[in-house]
Amino acid sequence: FTKPVDLPLLESRLERCFNTFQGGPFRVLIVDDDTELSARYALVLSSAGMLVDTLSDPHKLLSKMDSFSPEVVLMDLSMPDYSGPELAQVIRLNDDWLRVPIVYLSAETNAERQMSALLKAGDDFITKPISDSALLTTVYARAQRARMVSDALARDSLTGLLKHADIKEQVEIEAERALRTRSPLTVAMIDIDRFKSVNDQYGHANGDSVIRALSNLLRQRLRKVDRLGRYGGEEFVAVLPGCNREDAFSILDSIREAFSALEFSTDKGKPFNCTFSAGISTCMAPDWNNSTLLEDADRALYQAKESGRNRICK
Ligand code: GH3
Ligand code: MG
Ligand code: MG
Ligand code: MG
Image (cartoon, rainbow, N blue to C red):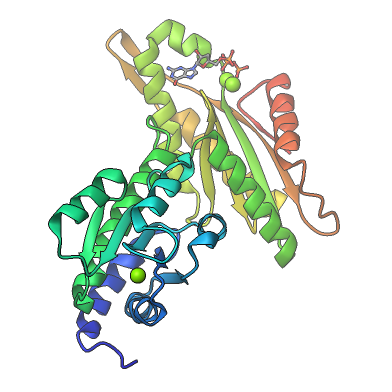
């Protein structure tokens, strides 16, 4: 294949967009029995930085969905054993894949057949032949929207941080990476002190402001590589890759100090202050046991509470 002629401009435009996204290149799966055509489309999409996989045997669709976890599926309308809509319906049976856009590829010019395909499952059509730029922008738009939706759903609505299950997963991912690269990893469990009485004295809405203020402060003070989640109501988990115990302690202690100095105003008169306690646990040489990071951080947090609050224990 020759490199498509209209790519350079689009490429540079889209590249800029890709860079604004965390989470790497968009993953696109092309399901088509016409391998020459899917190779051609794959070339166009991968030239723009997308990660593309192709499948010509529909029997392998489910295992491919599992292993590749595409963010967009391009689906041929007619294949030997199954039709595109039949396969799309199978994809839709799995809750994990409900949000994956399915775009049919078809030379079909019969509008009625296209409509009935869309009514069964699937989201849109690409009518073959399609220009490289139209293919690219259609897939890009779908992938971008899908990524935004899943990012938004993954985040806690009050703070915009990762939710419980996702921050736990980040702990595991970073723990594996730390072990592989032999670099230290620190996990911090952070809990606002006597928060129940903040709610009782100043009301739930003011309590919410305190939670938001702490999450903003943590976001500002931590690095881009750090992971941050709302673990529970007034409890946060921070994952600090490459950070040893002492560095993590001094970062968190300065955040502790800054937080305790924040003044929260109410309509009831005089402003109030809040504090938090935190426990940190680290895995690093020579002890690479990282399977109990969260429990150890929780234990250290308990210690911080027991020994008077507004402090970090390690
Ligand atoms: P400790 O210093 O031991 O942590 O005491 P605490 O009062 O902070 O601990 P406890 O776990 O007893 O209370 C946590 C409170 O946080 C209870 C709950 O009502 C409140 N809470 C949980 N989620 C939210 C929320 O989203 N908004 C508000 N305003 N309060 C919340
Ligand atoms: Mg076909
Ligand atoms: Mg608390
Ligand atoms: Mg708590």
